[in-house]
Length: 120
Image (cartoon, rainbow, N blue to C red):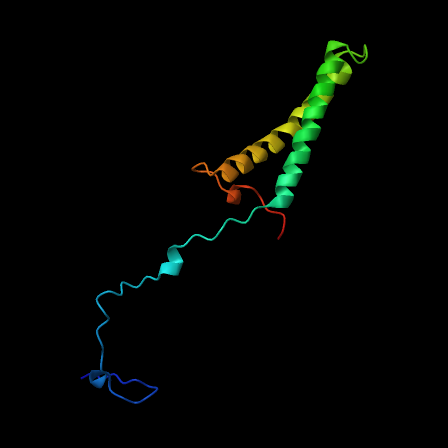
């Protein structure tokens, strides 16, 4: 025969514990858990993306002018590295600025959470 369970804190056997029924309107949820908090805008990351975008665009323009011969007659040996660096700097800046723009306009599927935040 098993011993009866007791509530150790009060010493009351569990068979004598009174239970109360929850109200029928309480489904266990509260309204606050469904409210969205306003998005935190990562200003530093957007500023960095803007700087990358501008530097990349500048390097692409300079590289294309070098390649076409308008700046100097150095040829492709100077122009190609400048173009490659310009493209590598331009792409992340453009990508994050596009996400920031779409998030600011409220497009579906875009949010400021997709941009890495440097405030940690």
